[in-house]
Image 1 (spheres, rainbow, N blue to C red):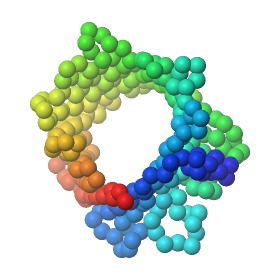
Image 2: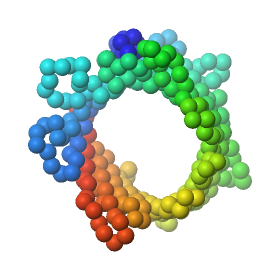
Image 3: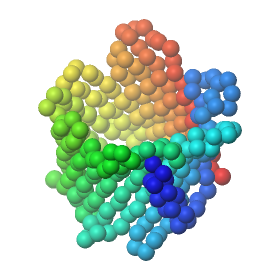
Length: 264
C-alpha cells in the first residue's frame, strides 16, 4: 500500500537516525552464492513530534539487484503517546513498497496493571479490519505475580485465556480454550539451570532445559518426543539453532542455522 509506505517513510524522516545492523545467516551449513547467506540490513530510528514518540525501521535484503522494490523485507513505523491517562501506541508494518495492505497493532495500558491489544490490517480494497483483541490484567497475590490474559479471534470467533503465576523460583502458565488446554511449569533448579515441562490435553509433551552461560548468554534445549530436539545457543551477536527430527529412536536429517549480527 503506497499510502502506508509514505506514512512510514514520513516517520523515518522526522526521527533521529541510528547506525544500521547487518545480519548474516547460514542455513543447513551450505550455500551456493551470496543469497544463500541471507544477508539482511536492519535500520531503526526514533524521535519525537510534539508529545508523540516516533519509531521506525526497515529491513532490507543485502544483495545486488536491478529491482530496488524487491529489497525491502519489512518497513514499519510506530507512534506512542498519552491519551486520557492511558499510554497508547499504534504500529504499522508493510512487506514492501508495493504492498497492498499493512499489518496494524494498537496497544493501550493504564500505566499500572491493565493493558489492551488490537491486531488487524489496513488494505487498499478491504479497508480497516481487526482480527484479534486481547486484554491483560496483572495483580499480586500473597507475594506471587498473577496475570490473566483473555484473547478473542474475531475471524474464527475462538476464545482462549492465558493465566500466569510466578513466585520465587517457580512459574506456571496455563493456556485454555474450549477444545484444548496446555500447562507449562518452570522450575529454576539453581542459578544456571531452569527446567520447563509442557503438557497438553491432546497428549503432547515437551521439556525445555535452559542453561545460563554467564551474562546474557544461554543454551536452550527443547525435547519433543517423537518429533524433534531443538538446541539454541545465544551468545550475544551470535545465534545458532540446531533442529534434529526424531521418530522413536530414529534420527532424521539435522538442520543447522547460524546467525551473526554486526553493528556498524
